[in-house]
Image (cartoon, rainbow, N blue to C red; front, side, top):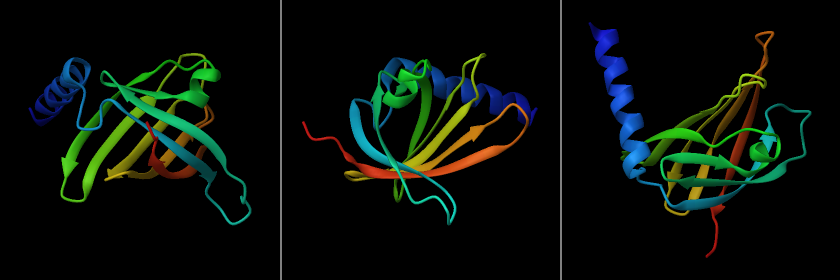
Length: 129
């Protein structure tokens, strides 16, 4: 019974995000993404846009991923969000993070088909304008 209620709750959240967006809907963010680990010094810039209940990751769109539905909720320390960019011909990319005021940070996990996962950290600020 708990599984059924969890699935129903998740479905209601997705419908709400599609229709009404979420607390961060209508915002855009400039972020730097860096692979976790001591030997990974470089980072790349990307742009995240939360629009009409979907997360658009500019770099991922350039690779052929479509915008993905996101879930978000307000918590005492800001707004938490999650989204999975999923395409049958590509590896799933999980974005999760927190927005506090005009700052954003979180984790990106790319799951390879062989079961390996590569973890990245991101942080940034609200896009001006």
